[in-house]
Structure formats: C-alpha cells, structure tokens
Length: 468
Image (cartoon, rainbow, N blue to C red; front, side, top):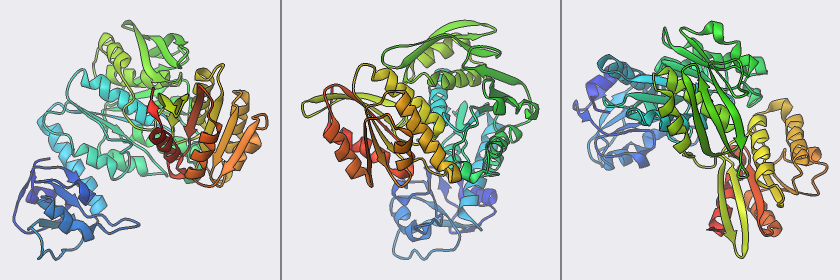
C-alpha cells in the first residue's frame, strides 16, 4: 500500500501526530512483521496491547502507526502516529478506502467465499485458477475475520486484477461487516452446516448469517450457489444480480461434475460441464468432497469471464496451499512406513465425514488409526455430534481411535465397534499413543478443531519422520 499519513487519517477519521510521511510498505498488526515504509496497527487484544509494541515497529522501519492514544517514543526512531477511536475499526476503514480507490482507478474485481466448510480450499483453488488469467491476491491461511480480511485487501495494488476473499463468521452480523469493507462482485455460498452452532443458535441462524454475503454484495453482483444444499439454494431471491448454480451431484445446475471417479489415493477426476462445453479435470487434492470446492471455484471464475478450458487446466494443476488441510504424505518413522492424512486445521461434522471417507478410501486393506481432538463451539449439540463422528469411524472399519480433549470421550461412545480406543489429555500423550500403535504401511488421520490442538500431533509425527 502506498498512501500518505494524511490520506490514512482521512480514511480512518483520525488525527495525524507527526510529519505527513508516505507509507509504501505492508500494513501489519504484529510488530514482528513490520517492515521499512510500512504501517503498524496497534490493536488491543485479549492478551496484549499493541500500543506496547509501537516502538518495536518503528525500529523495524514502519513509518506510520494507527493508535488509539499517542505513544511516547522518545527512545526509538520517529514514527508518525494517526490517532483513531478504535484501531480494529480503523483497519477496516483503511481497507475499505483503499479498495474504493483501486476500483475507481482500475479493473479490479472481488470474489468472496463463505460456507460452513470448504472456504479455505475453495479460496486456494480460486487463487490458482484466477492467477492463470491475471495478477491475483488472496488471503494467507484463513485470514477471514475483521482483522485478516482488511489486511488481505491492503495487499492489493494497482496491478491486481482479481481479489479473492474468504469471509467467516462466529455470529450474526460478522459477514455483513466484512462486506461493508469489501462488497463482492461475485459471492460464493458453499454449504450451510452444523458447524459452530453455539454462535448462531440453529442451522437457520447459520443460513441467515451466511446469506449476509449475498445481501452485502454490490448491485449486479453474481451469486454462486450450491444447488445441492437447500439452505444455500434458498438464498437465490436475495441475489442482486445473476444467479449461477453448481452441483456436486451433477444435476440441475449451470456448472456440474459428470462421471466422477476417485482413485486409490482418494483423488477425484471428473468432467467439468457447463452450457458452453465440457472439459476433463483431475484433482491432485485428496478427498471426493473437493469436487464441490472445485465446482465452486470453476463457477466463480466463469462468472468473472474465464473460459472453461483455462479453468479446467488450472484446477488440474492446483495443489493444496494451506497447511493442515487434507495434506497426505508418505512418511517413515524409524523402520515403519506409513501414510499421514493431516486435516487438523479445523473440524465440524461435514469435514469430519469427508476426512473419514478419505481415511477409508486410502486405508483400504491397511491398518487405520484416527487421532481426533474435540470439535469446539458446538454448544448443547456437542455430545450427539461427537458420537455421530464415532459412528462414522465404526462404519468405516477404523482399527484404532485416539481421542484428545474434554469431549473426545463422546467419539469413543459412538465408535463401539472400533477395537482399540484410547482417550488422552494432551497432544504429547496423543503423539505417544500413535507411535505405540504404528505398524507397517498403516494410515493415520489427524483431525480436530484448531484450538483443540490435533495439529500439534501432526507436527509431532512430521518431526519424528522422514518423507518416503
């Protein structure tokens, strides 16, 4: 971002303290990421006050800071401070003004993705497809909230043709706020599930929150809807422009998958079909559920004017970009070869179903071990939802279950036919339990909500292993 301190102050309704410097570096909220010419946003968080780190940002070369009070910096390099009422809100205001300026001066378009599951994978696929057409910016990891989204917007510049955004929510109004920062030209709705119902009250509440993406789109924007999900399909009347439907089941939509096949490694191939033609696609991503994500990305790219042959080629060449998301690796720990399915970034009932299906497909004829930390934010549905996942393990013929966390015992209750079930209290104990159970050529699935720390088990296995 290249903006003056005065411009930043006007965008954020702030007051400049210091010279009117020109910021031409990154905008960050972590002083450790500050760089020469950049802007540091001093947010107050639950565990730290960003104002305590303005000096660190200045020493790293930042030339401007968004602050809620003037900070005494007599012992460090000078830095212009723009005083605002709320630093997090000012970050959103800055991103909104930046995008408005880019739209006024060029041909940038915005495509946004939401859904209870699949947002990050679809975002990663869109990045790779749209990058085959023109310069594209997309979030790092899951930058999909009131901090991550504006930081992503602020990385776009005059050369950016496509801006891909992921929009998440933990309650009503969250996505509406994000669309006020970056109203999309294309809004993609993936699926409405039972994830995080504690913040919404019901599936209907989740659907209402997700529909905020459609309602917050620009006038004339294209709504891309999953025709197989009735809650998503019902959002069509709220669209502000054309409606494009995609269907993983292969029927009743504008963009469908025909002749879906899954190989022994769990990778899907299919024919991408739309009114203008048909093209073959072979995904390198593991899991049949990625067909839906690929169709969503294809429909979104098509809405932006990309041709079907380019879309199909890009999808076939796409790879997993974000860590801990259906990352399948052949490893060796000591003398024992194994396959690790690391899908430990997050979890809900829908992604659990997909992960267990992948474990069953890849583990056919082999010993299978599921390491599951608990799913969070389920409220009163937690016991039943965890038991349902346990039943999935039984149905898939899983050989061993290692449950991690307070509610993980419900997995075990639902997995009555899994012969080897153990509950542990921390990731270190879970890792030890896996290592005790490894046999030649077994398949290990690691899955759970991020803040229940199954990802630490996956990282521990990788540290123990050498890649085959």
